[in-house]
Amino acid sequence: MASPETPRTAARKTAAARTTSAKTAAARTAAAEKSAAEKSAGAAASKATAKKPPAKKKAAASGTAVRARAAQAARPESRLAMVRRARRINRELADVYPYAHPELDFRNPFELLVATVLSAQTTDLRVNQTTPALFARYPTPEDMAAAVPEELEELIRPTGFFRAKAKSVIGLSKALRDDFGGEVPGRLEDLVTLPGVGRKTAFVVLGNAFGVPGITVDTHFMRLARRWKWTEQEDPVKIEAEIAEIFPKSDWTMLSHRVIFHGRRICHARKPACGACPITHLCPSYGEGETDPEKARKLLKYEMGGFPGQRLSPPPDYPGKPAAPLGAG
Image 1 (spheres, helix red, strand yellow):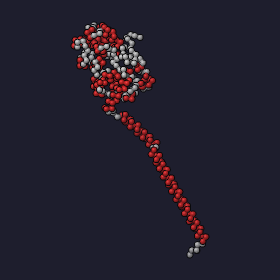
Image 2: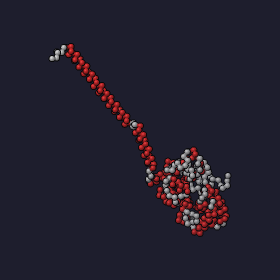
Image 3: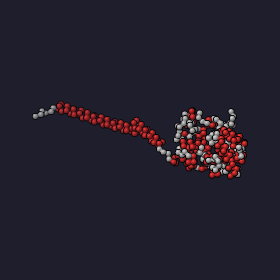
Image 4: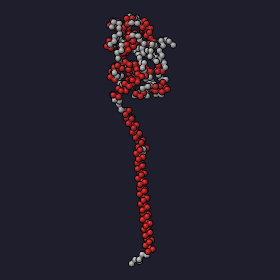
């Protein structure tokens, strides 16, 4: 049988119970505070993560963007995008070469026709240095038709292939005299019947002597049309047909001058001056040539490089220096 509890023992038990209860309450409060702190820290961390992704995730996102840009660059250009880019090139070339013009000296359609035939396989400069003496001796189709071949050959010798060229200019002069009343015809179908006259020569004459729009597909035009991805054709007639579908007819003649100017001055065949080109942002072939700006500037020709142009008698608005006569300097 248990002994009865004394008052002192009961008091000690009551005090111990109170202490235990206080400790339990304090422990519960601390646990609650810790839980709240952890929740707050978790929320803050979550917010920070939302604002700033981990380094790995950020790097992955950047890599994805780079791959997306590369994929876009590799994607074939649509027909519409190419046409828009081509027309923008034409507009920007118009700003670069507002003075673009035919680079053969001539005073009438006959002189332009003969000069264009002589320009095959040589420079316009060499033709311009040769034709003053030629036209002084044979100023009309009738005069040239009656020329002694050997004498005419000697006058045009500096242009190269002088025997074949002499045969052509004497032959076309006879055709003009006999079939066209001594006048250069203003129709493509008539011009291409003349000896030594193809579509390129005919369009030069039509566009610059008669104001009839035409696309002059010479070596410069063919090279740039392919570099700019306007066409993949190699045949001049097919190139002409494809380019004609890209540009309005009213642009054809000046487009030809601008493209040829650019090909002669900046976008050269062997070493394009890419670093000095004003339309690199539109060129899919950028980097084929010299990209260093200082080195590229040394490649510029004619007025772009501070040198004389190809004409002895350039138009009044031409910003460059006139070329020197044959044998001068």
